[in-house]
Length: 196
Image (cartoon, rainbow, N blue to C red; front, side, top):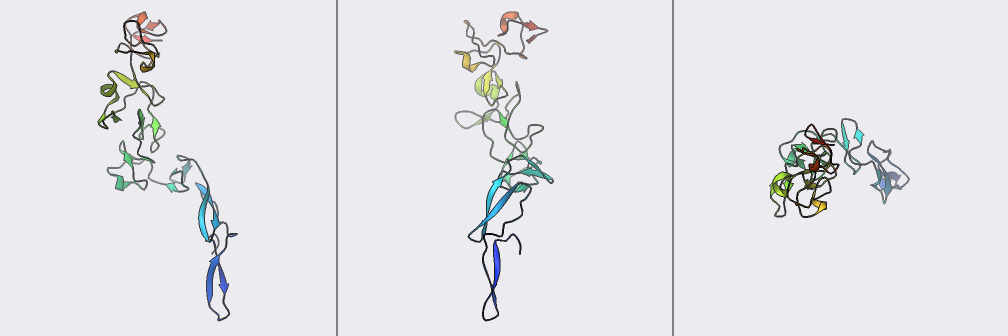
């Protein structure tokens, strides 16, 4: 059979046997290609996880997973073995400010958008809490970090969303954060209650 990495050999006694045929290259699939080595199919190249395939997404291992991103209740519902944030996910996705149910990327572990909450943040003890509770007034920065928002206590610039901790040890607001005065914002611009 073509693409099975085997060839049929006729024996002198009239019987046939299968032998490895490493020239019998399998046809490429939607999510990757294979070669023959020692009579077995082995992956050659795979399309990136999340690449669209017929009715699903490539799993990064050469297969088209038709359940990635679909609703699930338990890990048994998912071929990947990961039911995260209510959908079948490619991986465990326990990282800070990451989720598997982000619109447009369901099934893939993706950074939560700017100023969104991480409902399943894992604190230092491994307990799942939200980002705001874990870090004290924090939100996601869009790049996988849970950082403190305008007006929350800080000791250095790196812990603040806006990248600035004031002399009064309060985070200055980044664009889009709520504010009450010009001085609340890194830009020193507060219009209609929002840092510019």
